[in-house]
Image (cartoon, rainbow, N blue to C red; front, side):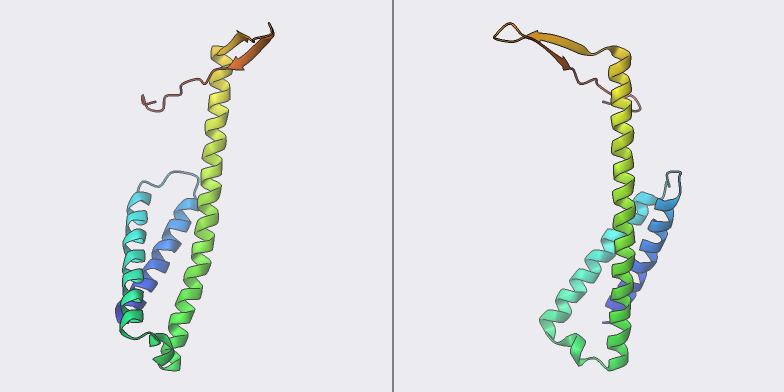
Length: 139
């Protein structure tokens, strides 16, 4: 159980650090390491929880009241921080989508990537072609 408490505490600290980095305007170069640590700790928490549940299904109820309160408090803190983290990530992804959409729209405007196709009944349909976008020389 000590491993679970340590892992929950470490995970909460890493989430704080990641949330702090996600609120900054510049990209954080250490974000991949924080994410890797978060994934590793989440795996440890899951494995330890499964082990405790397998060995003693009512392990949390069997703990002294003070230890139960400590674990419940840690879990509540973790859930709050995970909610903030999810919102920050959702906002960052939406912002990236908007930026990529604006870049694609500007590329279409500059290249004039439009074409016209005759329909079966002689109608003229115009369509916009997807403009390839290269970021750092990669499509």
